Length: 325
Ligand SMILES: Cc1cc2nc3c(=O)[nH]c(=O)nc-3n(C[C@H](O)[C@H](O)[C@H](O)COP(=O)(O)OP(=O)(O)OC[C@H]3O[C@@H](n4cnc5c(N)ncnc54)[C@H](O)[C@@H]3O)c2cc1C
View 1 (cartoon, rainbow, N blue to C red):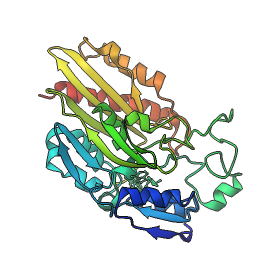
View 2: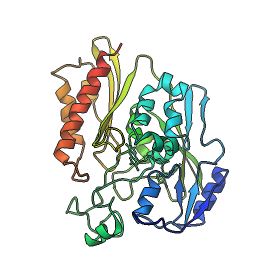
View 3: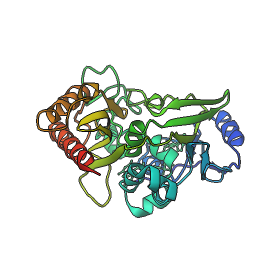
View 4: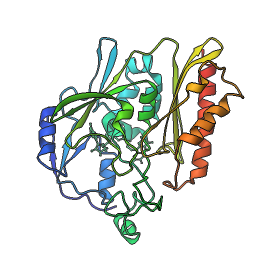
């Protein structure tokens, strides 16, 4: 690890001020808990002139109810999210995913916004400066070549955030604040399938909040992940699912995954609606995952293992939800 580069640190009290500071410096970066960004900066991945700490922005670290929606501020910590009574009561899968992120000390500092906006990862990127230089750098940072996919049309670094897939199956929205005002979009709309530019935030825009709609009656949801070190690690494969049973058949099944593509991915499962979940139909989900996920050699663990374990984790998770009372 290198020393951190020199930068100015700002601690605005309002979102307007945060956005104004960002507009004043093209290389400035927002920071929540810093558990993703500071590690990257110490590897020489970025040289911002300024960091804009969002944790003092009024109301950004609060969870509040607005009618039947639950608003989660982007600076709420993952530890705070996981123990919030309304989250635990109505959206336990979200608390489960928050508790699956990194280790306990990370979660005390790490924020919801930082988790959703965390950088993509790759074995050719999350390396020291001298390692990357020896390798001729890569398309994600300072280079023009992708070492993972040699046809080299884009960067294939992978998104490994645990929270986004759960928010996708819970049909959450996010609220973005920027120089041109406020906009609200669904969680999937925050991402695009380009490893070096995976967020759709315009320059200067900040993620302000996540909005959860009311939980439909009878919906069961969960999150499961596989990682190298169970105590503290990014998902090699992460699967979120939300299931509504209609008697003996599936009413609705939503599945979203992480650790496969450059963005968290919703898996099309419509074909399973109206059918029972059993040994005959479970392979249909496995097949959808095989077809839609695009797992590549971006982690030290081989792609074929990640592909297969993702299918097994998904099966196990839906089995559990199917049997829940
Ligand atoms: C050892 C280790 C293990 C980890 N394991 C996991 C894991 O299992 N699962 C997982 O998901 N993550 C993991 N992480 C990554 C990281 O700790 C978490 O994703 C964490 O939630 C990031 O939140 P943060 O507030 O610290 O983000 P920061 O580091 O503050 O920010 C991350 C990125 O988001 C941007 N950003 C922050 N807030 C906003 C905002 N409101 N609007 C716009 N942009 C914003 C920053 O500019 C930066 O680019 C791990 C990290 C480490 C070091």
